[in-house]
Amino acid sequence: MKQIAFLVFIGLSWPSLVFGLQVSFKDEAVVGGPMLTLADVAEIRPASRAKDVAGIVLFPAPGPGEEQCFQSRTLKAYVFDAVSDQDFIQWKGADTVCVRQDGERLGPEEIRSMINNDLRAAITHLKAERVAFELRNPPPPLVLPEGELETEIIFSDPDILSSRQVAVIIKVDGRVVKNLTLAGRVQAYLPVVAAAKKLRRGAVLKEGDVLTRSKNIAELREPVLDPGAVQGKRLKRSVAMNQVIGRHDVDGRDLIKRRQIVTMVLKKGPLVIEARGKSSGNGKRGEVIMIENLRSRREVPCRVIGPGLARVEF
Image (cartoon, rainbow, N blue to C red; front, side, top):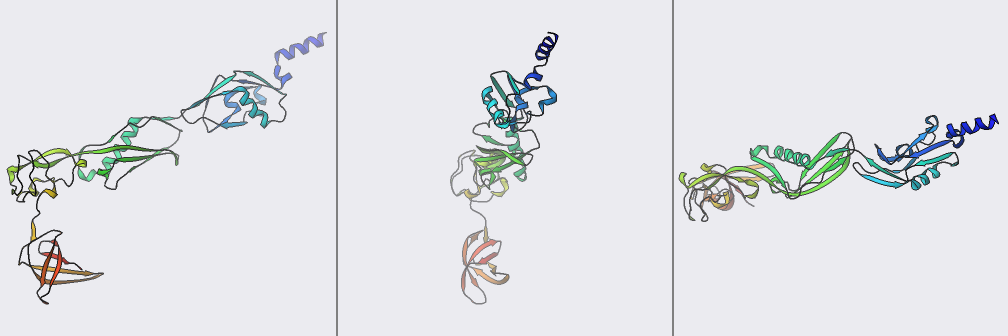
């Protein structure tokens, strides 16, 4: 009789001795890696034998910042696949286990700041003010795996001011974890030359005709930054008061005058030959005019490349 009472006492006090292992599923679990194990979702007793099943891999864990809920019977099935003798396990605990994985949060403002820092560095030579990439829609908040964070910012156009999209590549410990493509446009303000009053086509610009206005140069085509650069030049079109004047709106200065003696440059591979010639007309930078070679007396087409300097065109 005493033996029976002792055995009952032992069975009630240490069920693990009768059932082997006791696995109690948790209501909630937090994982820190890519794969979910039995130890993540359950408490296993006795601790001395937990190592026999604790490391059983069930399936991939939710991504960083995500949560998934699983039925305990589903979790049991994965354990049964991994062990040959299931009779020694006593199952207890929750019927449903909700699992989440924590990570590093990266908010929209942090992403925006990364983009703007890269933009400022890329156009620092312009010395622009109020530089930013104005996003059409804010980026979503991200939750990333813990580790060393790296970002790569790529603007959609080699002429960064014309970019309408930006790619944000996010790496953790050297591995790409997110690749975002965000739409928007560049904001970069600089003082540019504008008309101080209404000016008609053909007017020769003088000091009082122009002033400067702070404008977003990403929205302008070839703006003029120095008021002195347009003085003495003729307007090719009429402009309204406060309208921006671009380089294409004024006639450039003639670098070669009619009947001027100029230097003609002929380049062919590493060979460079210079000759003297006389121009048949006026020429601005980039224009092609006819120039008479003083030695051969032949007229050849030449492109104006500098004051009194023209390159022979083939």
